[in-house]
Image 1 (tube, rainbow, N blue to C red):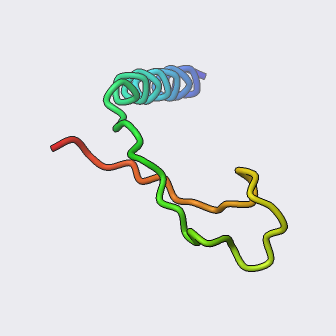
Image 2 (cartoon, rainbow, N blue to C red; image 1 turned 180 degrees about the vertical axis):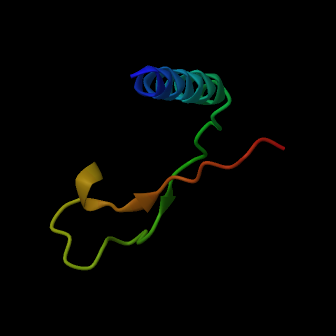
Length: 64
């Protein structure tokens, strides 16, 4: 029984540590750069010019 309680405590401490590290790393996230439009003249088969009809990529570059 003691081994099971110890295992549960170890797992709880490990999960708590992972959550703490994840929260700490979240503050250092890179700011998104300007989106890169994949097809400036319109995507093949797109019917409009609405934002959902213009596919783009948003790079998240590390700080210099």
